[in-house]
Image 1 (cartoon, rainbow, N blue to C red):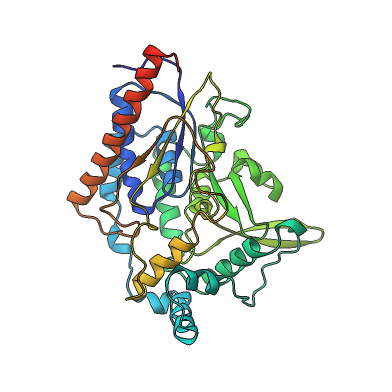
Image 2 (image 1 turned 45 degrees about the horizontal axis):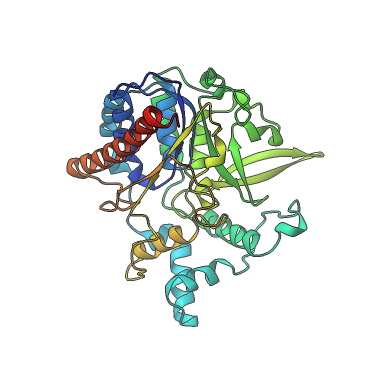
Length: 361
């Protein structure tokens, strides 16, 4: 069935390299002539969403991904690059902790740093703020990558479509949730304030015009997985001095920001998550890479109850055969992800079309 109705809003969850599955989603949508209104993404969903909003076709995205130089993604010498890994292994040895309990206890320790939590309201001080502060402090000590390479790559890809700032992404469908009508938005976490921010709208708080904010920078902020990428710094003038705010992956507090798009009856929303997630594998600290994966797993989705946001049209893409940090994918693994996304999208779109035909949504 070829879609000829109004556009849908789209939510894309995070999941590291599993996000390649979204290319399959877009391919299936193109085959049905489905159009998109507002798009919101987090982490991998921010990358995919930005490319979709820029006007890339699924076939062109395959070429873009194939051209990405994975050899520059070095996941060796983890203990040296990421001091948090060595500190955690020593913590477990000293305290005889095992499993995820040890991870959470480790992250809730106090670490000395210069991140100000002064502007947190009293009700938000405590466990969540402490964990976020510890995570940011540890991440600042060292990460696998600084994030420059990712941001520069995203900037080059977007530039080919004439996309530089969010002003270039105007022209979407304005609504009560997205009044400026940006085609794509994304989420990140302001560690200082222990809050999710929606990009670019919330940059007003930091004295930055949302229209003039770099899309590639926003993608970097949304994908800034602690311990994998260094936190992004944004300066805000307060009084007569600058205050540095630290931003990390929006998936830390909410891996599926459904609230970022309107879900009214007039413009329904569809959402995709990346399954076979990092929390589903047995916990292991056999190697430094295992510890890194466990740390990343522990710091995601800590801000909302599970299943807090539900929509009638959400599907989980089975990407379980690929790990979220498997940067060096071969052709077969890429095809697996593309196919997984297409299969999930076909299932979801079939349901949407059935409801449109027989129930009117």
